[in-house]
Image 1 (cartoon, helix red, strand yellow):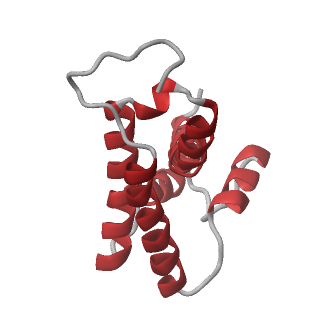
Image 2 (cartoon, helix red, strand yellow; image 1 turned 30 degrees about the horizontal axis):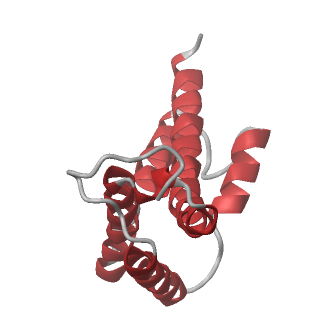
Length: 141
């Protein structure tokens, strides 16, 4: 296997991880609200909720201070090492990138991330996480 190809694969793996991170943030909130309705105990897990809140918190802080996401930086560096132009790659990377990267002014993303984070924070009051000392009962919230 050529070293350039390994950098290409690593870039695609990071892109895939980036997409999973976005899916966790976006669908995590949806699942919290759905879990409230269906009384799923796991949506009140404090470790899940803290991790979810921290994930969107990092995104908001990055957008407010103008820092590019490390996933993006690492992926682009690996693509350059692979001798590949920015976002010209495999079929999978093309579609993952199309879903992940939108063209809009930076302030639009900052506002969207901030509003989303506010909804995540509000979810703590509507779907309260358990305390770390509480044990979950199967199926009950």
